[in-house]
Image (cartoon, rainbow, N blue to C red; front, top):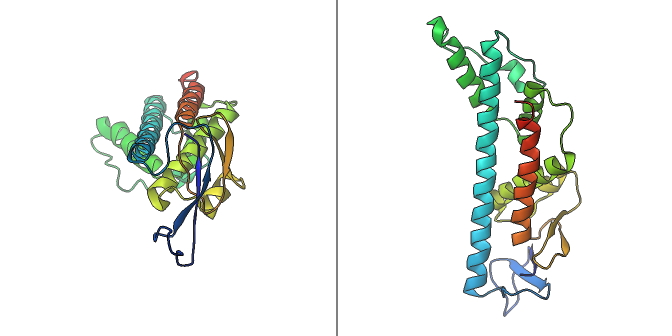
Length: 216
């Protein structure tokens, strides 16, 4: 499947084009899935759902890793300092009695706050908690890119926004199509995920998770 580059148009669609404001600009050659066919659209949707599920599971893994780490710290009688909003956490909702349940309720409360932090804050929290000085920066970058891709699929139907590029610090989101070619998706263009993208995500998550597992 080659990528289909799509962009939003502010003007009315001319005769003979889709009326939803989205037009195709062309496709890469060499693919086996034709854009516009029901099977092509079904596979694209399946890849998007699979991608979303993988990112959801990654978020769950981060939450579980944080809770495990914070419980271990509390068992030792300390709360580690972390360079995020967790340092200013409101603990008024924590049940301080009975004392036997303080650590459990505090850990649960901090984990709930952790889950609402931005993605970068959560990764920084885990770095402080597990004290890993070095990490696979390439894997960390790609996982963050795919987290951002899931966000834009949820909120802009896969169309790249300026905020996505700003958050990633790039001018375009570069992905690999099924033929192995790199393609840059810029502001206003709609991302179509390939099998190669899903494989890249799995490899990056695997490598990134090793940073945590080696320090637990």
